[in-house]
Amino acid sequence: MRTSLLRSMESVRRSGSGSVPGQLLRRSFVSSASTPQRKVAILGAAGGIGQPLSLLMKLNPLVTHLSLYDIAGTPGVAADVSHINTPAEVKGFATEEQLGQALEGADIVIIPAGVPRKPGMTRDDLFNINAGIVKSLCTAIAKYCPHAIVNMISNPVNSTVPIASEVFKKAGTYDEKKLFGVTTLDVVRAKTFYAAKAKVPVAEVNVPVVGGHAGITILPLFSQATPATNALGDEDIKALTKRTQDGGTEVVEAKAGKGSATLSMAYAGAVFADACLKGLNGVPDIVECSFVQSTVTELPFFASKVRLGKNGVEEVLGLGSLSEFEKAGLESLKPELKSSIEKGIKFAQEN
Ligand SMILES: NC(=O)C1=CN([C@@H]2O[C@H](COP(=O)(O)OP(=O)(O)OC[C@H]3O[C@@H](n4cnc5c(N)ncnc54)[C@H](O)[C@@H]3O)[C@@H](O)[C@H]2O)C=CC1
Ligand SMILES: O=C([O-])CC(=O)C(=O)O
Image (cartoon, rainbow, N blue to C red; front, side):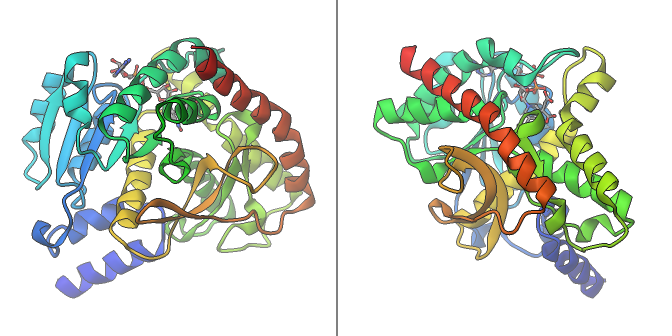
C-alpha cells in the first residue's frame, strides 16, 4: 500500500506543474514539525477564485498559517475552511482595519481580489475598477509585509503587475524577485488541450507559455511541448494556440454572465503558490512560467519560465528556440503587451 502510494507520489512529482494531488498524498508521510512556518495570505478570499483557492491552500502541508481577507463574506469562508483537519491554522479578516493583521508576517500574498469579466468584455475592460483595488492592497503589502512574495491573479495581469511594481517602488520596498503575475492557468490549459489533441497522457505533458495574460499576448510554445509528437500539423498547432489564447473567453461565455474561470484558476493558483513555497523552502529545480520583471525581450515585464528559490525569482529563463509561427506570434504580441504595461505604470504614477 505504502509502496504504491510512494510510486504515485513520485509520478506526480516528475510531472512538474500540478503537484497539489501529490501533496495530499504526502500529507500522511511528512510531519508539520519538519517544515518551516509559512504564512499565506489570500486577498479576495471569499470570491469565486478565493474560496476554492482557500480550500486548496488549507490542504497544502507547506502552509502553517492561512490568512483569509475579503471586504465581504470572510467570516463564513474562514469558519468553513477552518474545520478541515489539516495543520494550517486559519484566520479570517473582514474589514480594511484588519488588513494589516491579515498581512503581518505573510511569506506569500495571493491576490484574486477584483471584478471578473462578463461576455463581450476584454480583460482590459476591468482596468478601471481593478487597478484601484490592486493599488490599495499593494500599498498595504508595502506597509505590513514588505518582504512577502506577491502572486497577482487580478486582471488585467499585464497591467496589475506593473501597477504593483510602481506602488512598491514608491514605498521603497520593490524587490523584482518577489513580484509574480500568475499565468499558470495558461500553462494548465495548454497542457490539457495538447494532451487531448496529441493523445498523450496529460500528467506527462509540459508546455511553456510566454508573453502575457490576455488574448494574443498569451503565446504557448507547442514546438517545445513534451512528450514531442509528429502527429500534429501546422493547422493543429494554430488551433491549439488559438484555443489557449481564448481559454478565458471560452469560460466567460460558457458561464454566460456569472463570471470567469474560478475552479481551474484556483487549481492553477494553488499550483503556483505551492511552487513558490517549495522555492522558499529550498527545494531545488522548481520551474514555472510567470509574468515577471524581465530582460528576455525589450519589454520590462514578460512571462517565461522562471526558476524559483529562497528569495523568489532565482533565474528568469530564456525562450529557447522558437518555430517560425511562434517567432511571428512573439513579434505581434509586443505592441499590445507594451501598451498594457505602460498603462499600468502610468496609472500608478498618477494616482
Ligand atoms: N490570472 C488569471 O489567470 C485569472 C485571473 N482572474 C481574475 O481574478 C479576479 C477575481 O475573479 P473572481 O474570484 O472570479 O471574482 P469574484 O467577484 O467572484 O471575487 C472577487 C472577490 O474580491 C473581493 N474584493 C473586491 N475588492 C476587494 C478589496 N479591496 N479587498 C479585498 N477583497 C476585495 C470581492 O468581495 C470578491 O469576494 C478577476 O479580476 C478575474 O479577472 C480570473 C481567472 C484567471
Ligand atoms: O478570462 C478571464 O477574464 C479570466 C482569465 O484571466 C482567464 O480565465 O484566463
